[in-house]
Structures are given as C-alpha cells and as structure tokens.
Image (cartoon, rainbow over all chains, first blue to last red):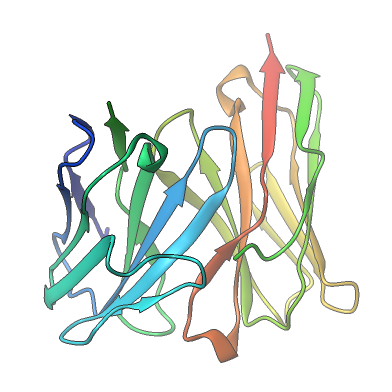
Length: 115
Length: 112
C-alpha cells in the first residue's frame, strides 16, 4: 500500500531557530500534499495544501512566511518552521494524495518542541 | 478550519461493549472518512463512506451517513482494550479542492 515517510519524528530546537520537516511518498506520486498541526488533546487543523510545482495555499490564520512549504517534486514536500517559538510546539502531520479521487496517506507525524 | 462537532468528546466503556461515536459537519460533502489515532502517533484510515451511501460495514466497524442531517456515526462492536484511541471523522467537499477537514474527535477508552 501507499506509504508516506515523515522525518524527523521528534525534534527539539531553540527558540529563534528554524526547523525543516520532510514528507516523502515512497511508492506513489503525491500530486497534492496537506500539512496539519495538532495540539495536545485537539483535532488536526489543516495548515496548507500544496500541489507539486505550485505555491502552497494556506488556510486562514496560518502565516505563510512562518511556515514555508516546498513541494518541488512529486515525492517530496517540506515544511519549514522559521524563527520557531515555544507556541509553535506541536505535532505536525503531512498527508499525501495521488489523484483527486484517491485516498489520503498520512505520515507518522513530527513532534516539535521549541525551548 | 474545522468541519464540525463530534460527540461524545470522551467515551469510556468496558471490553465487549459497543462504542458509538457521532460526527456532524457543516458543508455538502463528497465523502466522509473515519480515522483512528493512537496517542501521539499518525493516523490510520478506517473506513470511507460516499455521499450517496447510507451505511457501510468493515469487520467490527459500522458507519452510517445521513446527509439530510449532515451527520455520521461510527459503531465499534465487541470492543477490545486495543481499540483505545482517538477517533476522528473527516470530510471531503467538492468545492474545497479535495481538502480533508477533520472533526473534533472522540477519545475512546476501553477498559479490560
């Protein structure tokens, strides 16, 4: 079945630094990738949608200059949290889809802690 | 953005009992999906029901969809301790570019 590999699974960074999270589709071409954020005991909040080769579309309230998304190839999308602050500490999960009516495959998530 | 509410927010039952979780949504949908998440982990897709379907079964899972009420339910029969997890419904709407929007989730605890 379809697999999405997400790295790192956990990262601790200092306040003010940037962190990059990678999501790779291993056995299919991810024409669309979705990035979610999840705070403890809460649901997944969609941050942005990215299509390969295009700029990401951000949800209302999500700062595009803070959360940089790159989807330069059909198998790789990255989320960079720039100038991270403690309030950015969260669980970030990516999801990939090959075609519109195909299923969604989720990565295993990245636990970001900003100290 | 969140699609809607799920209830209950938390559910605690004994092994062997059935667990029912409900989900409501706001917009018209193409399909509705249920996912499971173990604590701090990724999501596992459980079942998908299309907007023209009313009921679907998969093993111990039964999902219903009422598009007139914009609601769905997930029934887990003969629950096991291993079913302990958070369960989320998520919807796909035709006019939102295929985005998968999640409900609030139900935290299920099955006691042995």
